[in-house]
Amino acid sequence: MTMKIVFQKTSGLTDKPTHYCPGCTHGVIHRLVAEVLEEMGVLEDTVGVASVGCSVLSYEYFNCDMTQAAHGRAPAVATGVKRVLPDRMVFTYQGDGDLASIGISEVIHAAARGENITVIFVNNAIYGMTGGQMAPTSLIGQKTATTPYGRDVSVHGSPIKVCEMISVLDGAAYIERVSTHDVPHIQKAKKAIRRAFETQKRGGGFSMVEILSTCPTNWGLDPAESLEWVRDNMVPVYPLGVYKNKATGNL
Amino acid sequence: MGKVLMKGNEVIAESAVHAGCKYFFGYPITPQSELVAYMARRLPEVGGLFLQAESEVAAINMVYGAASAGVRVMTSSSSPGFSLKQEGISYLAGAQLPAVIVNIARGGPGLGNIQPAQSDYFQVTKGGGHGDYHTPVLAPASLQEIVDLTKDAFDIADRYRTPVILLGDGMLGQMMEPVEFTEGTEIRKFAKPWATTGTLGDGPPRTITSLELDAESLEKRNWDLQQKFAVMKANEIRYETYLTEDADYIMVAFGTVARITMNAVNKAREAGVKVGLIRPISLWPFPEKPFLETRDRVKGYISVEMSAGQMVEDVRLVVEGHAQVDFFGRTGGIVPTQDEIFEKIMMAAGGVTV
Ligand SMILES: Cc1ncc(C[n+]2csc(CCOP(=O)(O)OP(=O)(O)O)c2C)c(N)n1
Ligand code: SF4
Ligand SMILES: [Mg+2]
Image: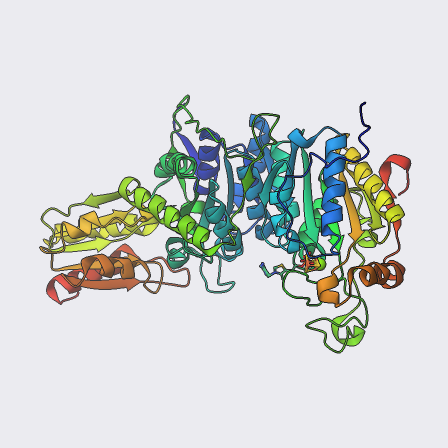
């Protein structure tokens, strides 16, 4: 009797156990990216660029060639790789501190140039790795290590909405925001990642998927509460959906 | 190909093309802008790629990406922009990636001015960015020498997997001289099995990183780096000596200042003073030999620099008190004249000015 395989570990990930905290959705997002690369059959043609944040060791987990960039600089590094190897798949994997704060210039200009790369942008509204400080994406009122009284607009300004900002650039080809707070949304997230990589594959230009993600450790919530916090607090501030898709004329 | 009249900045660019560099990422800054413009025009002609980055920070990280993909790549800047590249240079050194970075230095600190200076000597020879590292630094004194040293810079970068700095000053970048490029010289090819190009099904995935969370492993990696620096010290020292055999006094100068100093040395010789010149060409590794060979027989050394006194510290380190070490410098973009250097020599030799 042959058994039907209903679930299999993706070959897009190595066997190394990840170091992510219990309930952290970084791991889920890794798997989505890895599955898409596997399903598209492009793992051997892919160069990933790891950033600085909790995902700094992502080069240990993705089963493809990986290079590690300085904090915020992944889109510039990816530009260098892609310009040398235009027929390879090149992606960055960046947190919100990395992308929206120290590296905002690099990502904006990569998008403006229409750099044919894919950016996986993990927005957990906090600096996870350094112990829970305010990120540019932290919500108004959110308590963090550096906003102990809550994020105050008059002092810290308002959250940066990266998809909204990037999608106005002509070079941006595919921009979508998705979430990981329940299974249907995770499935949607995977489809978005697939569309982003497909955009790159056909030379469409800059693609980015912003993925709302949890940080139970620094939010001070358990894993289940964290998913609810994404749904109830982050999604209203960061509306989900396709912000730009040049292929369908959704400009 | 015969001699052509070119600007220093253009010679660096054309020499890089001759060395097989097809990728350049840059950002405009005076006095090196001609280099960027030359590359923008020239690289498409040879099937290469020029990209103007949004900042020096981005440019050096694009260099990091291109180097990790296994090609010869260059960026250039001048002092304020070079400071911005230091983060990336530290990462290149840590991740052991080859690249050539040009600094056509200008007056500082801060925005300073756009006149020639050598006041980035500390920055380029002592590491410059964070962490325990050095980068080889080559300092040409003429446009013809740029041709050879640019090629050497790429070879050293590939051979040792290291960023290499080509240091000039605004004068070298802006001056025009006839130069000759030897056509058809072979471009040395170095195997780069470590490059992250996509595995293409050939072997397991590769990783390029400067991160090592385990202290013991990072210490080991750092000692390995030091070992590499020791090999560079043994093999990559370059310098020139002029009239040092019988010299009572030896001048020390690099780059364009060495040329002016050489004229002053000639004038002093005519006046009967036994004076010579040591011209370091590799600023790191610093040439110790010509000092060790002379320090017990000369009366003194005079380091001449376009700074408030930087290389003179390395001279003192190697002379170790065996002879007097003096300094003469101009800063702020002022180029020392042959006459003032001559006067300095005469004062040292006889205590009198002429
Ligand atoms: C130049 C520089 N500045 C600061 C740091 C410290 N640092 C490491 S990770 C990080 C923030 C990461 O936050 P994010 O990008 O949101 O990733 P997360 O850990 O939340 O996934 C900071 C500030 C650094 N490594 N380099
Ligand atoms: S600190 Fe936060 S973001 Fe980092 S691994 Fe833990 S839960 Fe995830
Ligand atoms: Mg974060």
